[in-house]
Image (cartoon, one colour):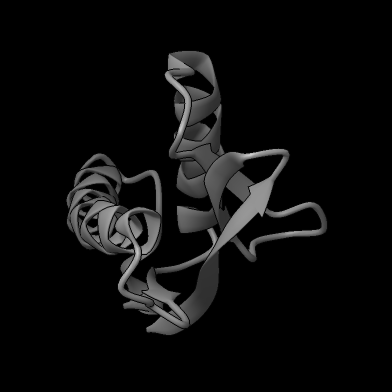
Length: 99
């Protein structure tokens, strides 16, 4: 299973999880309530699942609040991505050869 790197980034007092996927990456807001951005990020990750299973690995987890929230978020996100991949496999949307 491929490991994809992620980190907590900040810009202009706004925090987000940056997942290194594709050319532009995936950004999930942590300090703002932006459900459409979260949905867009999840959709990008689902598209990545079609290429094969992966797990997101959060790097440099510090003791600050946003890093701790990101750590829990990534843990839950990894669980959900496994469930989505299993459903995609069940419906024949992805090959089981990439497991």
